[in-house]
Amino acid sequence: MKHQRISSEHDYIAGATSTLDFASSFASSNALRPRAHAIIPGGAHTYAKGDDQYPLIAPGFIERGLGCHVWDVDGNRFIEYGMGLRAVTLGHAYPAVIKAAAQQMALGANFTRPSPLELECAEALLQVVPSADMVKFTKDGSTATTAAVRLARAYTGRDMIAVCADHPFFSYDDWAICTTPMSAGIPHQVSDLTLSFRYNDIPGVAAMFAACPGRIAALILEAAKDVEPAPGYLNELRELCHRNGALLILDEMITGFRWPDQSAQRHYGVEADLSTFGKALGNGFAVSALVGKRDIMRLGGSEHDGNRVFLLSTTHGAETHSLAAALAVMDVYRTEPVVETLARQGERLRAGVEAAAQRHGLSDYFQLRGQPCNLVYISRDRDGAPSQLFRTLFLQETIRRGVLAPSLVVSYSHSDDDIDHTIDAIDGALGIYRRALEDGAEAYLIGRPVKPVFRCYGDLHH
Picture (cartoon, helix red, strand yellow):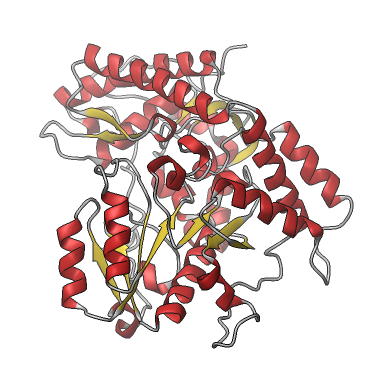
């Protein structure tokens, strides 16, 4: 069955197009939007899912998903990429994961004492991160990274944290958000304790340590994002941290399970002092983890004679159905070629999209970055500058063709047919992109451009 196209291919006459298709294709979404914005700040509970991240022609609310397909409240069907902000690596409603979670829910989700699943799931996760000794579970990545920061400060007795400036989001807590344009409400005393460094820049980190001797508790970064680490970079960074009495924290929220060897630490051959996992760990269920060396992690327990760290203690941190889901996910990774499939389908998608870009003469204007399992795209204007306007146009045109692609991050459920359909849809979208470079994107875009998540002012600021 082919994917439903939400509107017919438009004949762009004099650069204009009707908004009637928008109104009819997304009538239910359009009715829900004002209600949502009236009672939910931003209209969504996750900034990256907000209306300002998508063109005017876009599904406003997703009702259900199966595999790599989603249906919005108007019944429009899409091939989805990004898959729940990279949290759904196996596919929506993946049978083995749903079965495990449902069976556990029938037995109860939360008790007054630990469940044996807490031990079982911790042991399974340590198989993925063999350099780590202990685990604490929680519900989201921000909580896990903030716990790592608190633990590093307690262990080192220092107060400053350094975050990688090329990896823009580590937590919604003050220590991280103070480095973004959305720093309103954060006291300068907190901001003064956070430094930043650039990825793949060892001399810059060395200079930072020299400028703040004995102050920096830890460096936190993703092992890789859309740029690969330079040869030896991660181990050199770890040695530099230890030489200066600081810890190395690796945020593996995205690389965990998705990267080759299921862990960036194993793939690149580096041992972090502390690391955080989530997203793919639960395939959409809320579960994240902090893992690390015993001599550091034990400060969050009671079997030591030092000051005890209030590490992670949340009512819902070890809900049994989420842990059952995580165990099922890890079992799928052990028994099926998930990582290999992500790499193969990502390469297939990359090759097709880059060929389409070349056919349209857009190789300098529409580019892919990152590992095959984690592809993102860069949209450029006629001057070659990154452009939100052209990103919006690309999103609009792929949505018209049944593809919802804030990124091009594949899942285990993306079939060859799904990839081929996506390449065809992108080929059509790039045809409009080419014309827009010549005529101006405004001639083809309906409505306003998308906006960065991290910006100082709201939509009404002038």
